[in-house]
Length: 81
Image (spheres, rainbow, N blue to C red):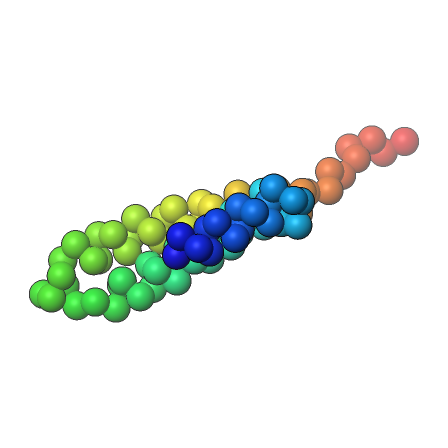
């Protein structure tokens, strides 16, 4: 996992990947981890479910942050002249 982070950081410094896409990819990775941890039964490891919920929230936040950075909303004009 550390090597992926180093590779993404290197791509960001040379300008290949923007901050928005970095947030999108981070959010997707956290959502994948949330899914995998959510499949662990409660009686096997109760902490896995709690960590899964935390990863879900943070992953959704990162994903929306990245989408808003990469795809800004087009503002409609309110003038009807």
